[in-house]
Image (cartoon, rainbow, N blue to C red; front, top):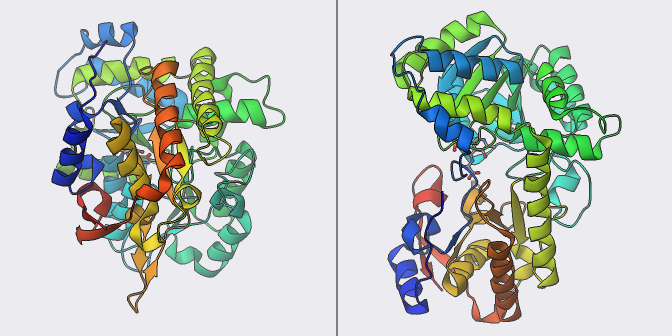
Length: 444
Ligand code: F0G
């Protein structure tokens, strides 16, 4: 699909920002020139996927399209029990509505924001245990998404009766789209099992993670992506997935399980919230496109181009003097706003200021992953910043070319050269959960 894009004038962009309360989620997509808000559901489907759409079987129960989807998910995860959902957070909601409650702790390398919100909404506590290297934007480590196994064991030793499961996010989106090694997945799973705790994958970007394992982990250089994927899932008792990423489609998700009893229990919640067991909020044609996407994403040539494009984007940003989180991850480049906008105080949201600057100066939309998204107040009302102040520039799959990304790198470079003219922000409205989606800000 080819889409027209256009750049609004500077005055129009400034007015749109004011109207949106400086929240980029509230800007009309039509007014965005290069949209790097997310890689979720924003990819272009292939010819094979478009033709599969025409074969959608829209029967309510046990449609032909469901069996194709089911076989594709089973092939990837090796799990017998699959609940289809309309997107990832619906799978999380169904899972945590049954197991999260006050007193329950759910560890992870880093929970994604919707995962954390679903756990907390039902009363549980979401704990992030990523390795120290994963919190330092400048530290080079091949698997910055790894879980800190010592911290995990400490938590399991003290609290295992209150931990129904541990999640592991592949790749670690919140920490920079960074991969988790197979060695770490295997060890975390073994630790959990030693303490009678289940091990789940948040598998949105499983294929990108597998590609990094092939390129960076000893012993996997000659393995097929599909084999690596199989081994990754072999250590998990279950998985949630937003198929809007490595499903290469615009909507979809699932919850996969090994155990029939949990499947039956969660299946009732699925029927109540999403739809019958064999469509879960998706149309037959969506299931068809996903079944094809799950196969296409395992193509190593595709993954090489995908991950290579992100790496190249990172190089161009660096050449333009823009500080980034290194090494680059699988789906996005993360700008380091703590360094780039060091003149802005943490409580005035430097990463949001850089996000706003990108739109104002170039019509580019990214997303803040810093204190606006994760900052908190302690019991005494003191501001507690997020560990990093990042701006994520997520690249949709199979959409933008190198020249689109060069434009972004050049705009970002010119912003850095005149950083002093950009100021911080103050919150004027915030909701109780997931505030970054609807927050409104005032320019200081
Ligand atoms: N887990 C991870 C690691 C994610 O990145 C996302 C979504 C979800 C779960 C939830 O899936 O959106 O289908 O409900 N991430 C998107 C993003 C929104 O922009 O990173 P969903």
